[in-house]
Length: 200
Image 1 (tube, rainbow, N blue to C red):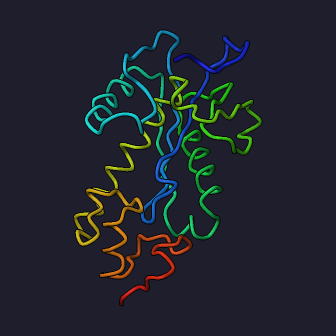
Image 2: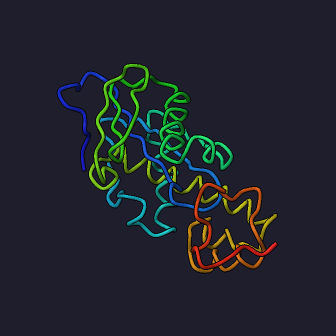
């Protein structure tokens, strides 16, 4: 993988990505990362293609070697208010806000983004499998969000968030049907198939 930046070698390039967009509960989490030109990690890839242990092994390497990085959450109430697409983009903007260095170019995973502070950007579908800085952001977003869901699981073990991280697994949906929804569920999402009803 390489850097996305086009004819802008004198500028710092940030990669950004999000995790948790399709979840039924918890935040959508974004990360932004600026890597040095010399950065290399042999098996860094789209976080979805890595094992859990690989992601957590990579995280300290990314954080140690990055010029800077930041992570931001947008929580379920705001997701329900502004919709998941806007929440995902806002989370990426907040992560960029928190960077200690200002990028001159932004590489974005996916196909939708809103201009951030008039900085040039490019959206790349499946960019987390193509470009190092997006892949690094993917790993950070995924692991920090997973950490958050594991903490929520301590107070809400009935939903098994330590295992499913809030994703729409059959087990998660079975538990929503059995226990009802929590304050952390996204009420604008279809939490159960239409033929099933919530029990309260």
